[in-house]
Length: 312
Ligand SMILES: NC(=O)c1ccc[n+]([C@@H]2O[C@H](COP(=O)([O-])OP(=O)(O)OC[C@H]3O[C@@H](n4cnc5c(N)ncnc54)[C@H](OP(=O)(O)O)[C@@H]3O)[C@@H](O)[C@H]2O)c1
Image 1: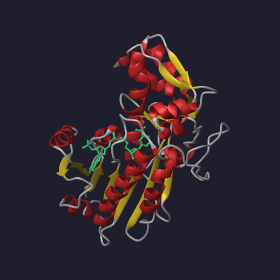
Image 2: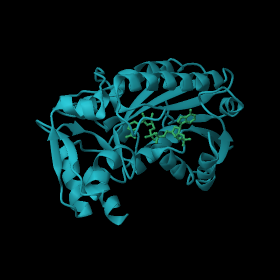
Image 3: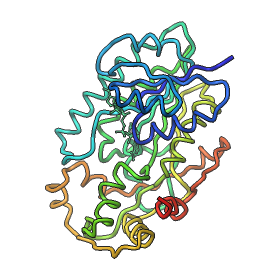
């Protein structure tokens, strides 16, 4: 029998890749929430059925959610573009909780549902510069982390009879959009300087957006969370520094690299305290648990993923 999968956030940066990879799965029917005509067209083009609705408002969409076998929640309130201050992050937290509330209210008590909830590695935050840490590390949230903690706890509290919950914590998801475009690709392509913090360059744990979408499909269809909820880091094999990201991109794009080094307090003024907090964090996570489930990366390192920029 066909499994019904309901996606929230299927038109976003990670969601599009997830829908794309769901297309090659057999025996699934994919529904995705659209809050505009534009999003509905995107969903159709990705081979899924669009359901109209806005997660901030209760509505007919909740009936479809309640009948789904698998719910993949990748939606988030808008975050990019402007300075990200603590006030912006608080608004993000409130909107995210309001969106999640309408989703969780919709999940029927009688119907068995698996929820794949997408959070972010900022929930775990600072790891130090030693060996990559696994999902059992004590969270030390940075960036948006403190503002998604309540949401993750609420999602995990659903786990129990008839509800299976997996929380995915993607690392720094890179591709032709999101943070990599805003802070690295656009300035390097336009010959503008890339901002870097003074002092040693910090570590992040990247994952190519294509692998992130594939990993979410893998968790949704091939991994079980029976006894307790499960958490997975979605990161590739090798953490990398911001400096090495900038160097790698400049080389592949064949552009000279201009770096503007600024102290943390100036970055805070310019880009907001949340971005400053991200850039001052060392985030070295391990994918050992994900790999144990049999997941294979197409781009196991940033160096391998860089090739996709050369072709585009
Ligand atoms: N990007 C990263 O590097 C990264 C890293 C780690 C974790 N994550 C996490 O991954 C998740 C997705 O990130 P992303 O970068 O793919 O996000 P994104 O590109 O900003 O996409 C957000 C999605 O949410 C939808 N959405 C926003 N408000 C909505 C509402 N009120 N009702 C219904 N849908 C709504 C958007 O729909 P429209 O198309 O209609 O706007 C869009 O599909 C987030 O939880 C984020 O924290 C991202």
